[in-house]
Length: 434
Image 1 (tube, one colour):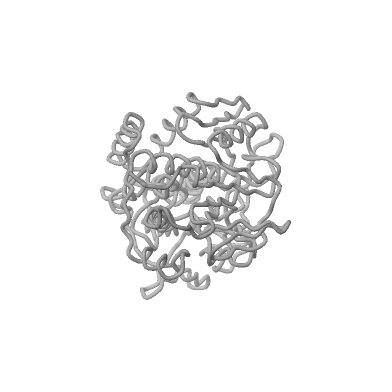
Image 2: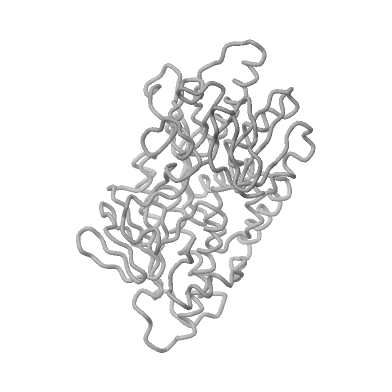
C-alpha cells in the first residue's frame, strides 16, 4: 500500500490523518507526545480553569478503530530524502511514499535577552501546567508572608503580546485573582495583584476591527488590567521586565504570548525551503517546493490563501482553522494523485475570528466583518470551542466545568501538582528549564 507518514498530531496532522481513514493507503502518525492538545484552551489550564486532561486526548483512541492508521510515539530528527525515510530518535526510520509535515510552531522570543530563560510561553500542555503551578505557588508564597514586606513584583503578572492569547491570559488572570481572594481565604488584598499587558503595536487584537479592539481594551481596563500599548520589551530578568524606554517592571511572572516561530521545530530542520519566520514554502496545492509528494500544512507552512479575491497571494495566519483546512486538503491531494487526477490549489475559507476576554465578555468577528461582542460573543466562543474539542468525553467534561463555574464562581482546579515547579520556585523564582 501507499505509505503516508504524517509528522505531528496537532490540528493539521489530525485533519490530514482523518481524511485518509478507510482509504487505500497506510498511514503512520508520528508525534513526540501520545496525545492531541486543544491549544485554544491552554490558557484555561494555565489559569486553573480546566484540568490538563480536559484539553488533551490520546491519539491512539482517536484512531483506534481505523485499520489503516497507526501511531508512533517518537521524536523526528530529520528526513533522508534519498531513501525517503523519516528519521526518528532512537528508533528505526519510517519509509514513506508521501509525507505530510504538520509539526506546528513554538514560541518566538525575537532575540530578547532573558526571555527564553525567565518567561513562560504557552504553546504546549507542559507550558500550561508549569505556568499554573508557578502562579498558584506565587499566591501561596505571598500569603505565607502576609503582614510582612513582600518582594518587589511578587504579585505582578506581566503578559507580553496583545493578540488573542495575550488578551485571554490577562483576562483569565484577573478572574483567578478575584476568585482566589474571595473564595480561597488568601490574606492579601485583591488590589495587591497587578496585571500588565504589553504590546509593541498601538492596539489589541490587530486582526480584528478597531471597534472590537476598543471593546477588548475597555473591558480589560475595567477589570483592572494595565495596558502598555506601543511599548516593546528590551530585556527579561528573573525579577523584572525592562522596556525599551527604560521603564522597569518588578515581576516574578512573565507570560510570553508574543508570537510563534517554526525555526526550532521539525519543519526547520529537514532541509526544505523556508520563508519568513521559518515557515516551509509550499506551492498552490501545498506541496513543498522542490519535493514531490511532500506536503506542509498548518503553522509549519506558509500556506497561501488562494482563490481569486484580494489577498489571494498572501499567506494565511497561523490559526487552527488554517491547519484544519490545509491538512484536509493535503490528504485529498494524495488521494487525487493515486487516482491519477490532477491536484487542486488550496483555497482558505475564512470562517471568522474570535477571542474571549473573560466571563461573559468576548468578541467574534465573522467573515463579513460583522462583530458580535459581550455575552453573545462569549456564548459563540464557548459553542465553537466545544464543537472543535476532540473527544466526546472532553466535550461533556468541559461543558459541565464551564457551566458549574458559571453557577459556582469559586470552583476550579486550583491545585499545585508539579514538584519540579515548586522546587524551581524555591531555588530561583523562575520557570524550570526546558
